[in-house]
Image (cartoon, rainbow, N blue to C red; front, side):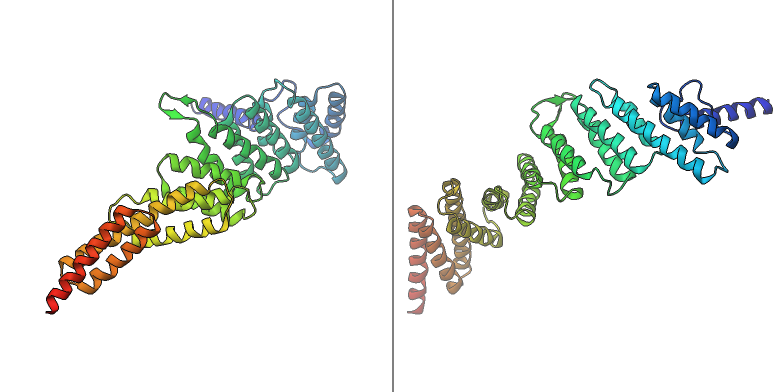
Length: 356
């Protein structure tokens, strides 16, 4: 029984070693080479590569590279042939209709860094072209984890952007309830965090802000617009983002009491935008938001003025009533201005009566 278990364990170990390169070892390729057998293996691999059998040549040299006691000359020869066969294999597997999984398996082959990354990038591109967007994204993340700061980062950034924007523009659903658009934030967040020099980073921030606004996550949407204006100050998206930030602040304030600090901040942002963009096509929308903000400020001051009037704080009531009147006039709300005038007159009348 013990010997059977030992044999089973050995067989399992051999199977693990044989499959450690991510794909099945071709038939006729040994599990290992003795040092003395490596020169013959090199010649055989050369013949295989010349005969269009790049996979066999690659595997043969991969196993030969593990032999111990090789002279520097032989080891260099093995490494050179391994790289040549791997590059040829990558070219073959990059053809349209190829299985991206075969290229991805090469990441487990312990190839030189540059060749392995090239194989991974080709696989990610093929996956995207086949509609496997999530698999392509995961493979790009794997490349970053396995080979930080690799030489294909510009291409990886472009592909990540394509995946994220493709998700964002997809109206379809999966699993009945989930939208493909909802998958865009993970990809685009990864892009802007790990690829800050990607030229379309501004579009990524804008798209993220749009999606978060749709999800009613106003704080996160504001954050993305602020990031856009900070990191891409020359972007064509900046005026729209600067206009959207105060709009979202107003949308986030649902209480009738409002947040005075946020309202004051919003007013300043809106007035600055209107002053700085006299002919921008978004100006009517921003002016509408400014009127809304001023009316909310007036509502807030009227509320506070009534409270102070109720607790007999005449000075506080007068201050807020006067400010409400000014804000109502600035906002062009005649009814609100009339209400503030009546309240102010009542406060002053009560004060005068009390002083007699």
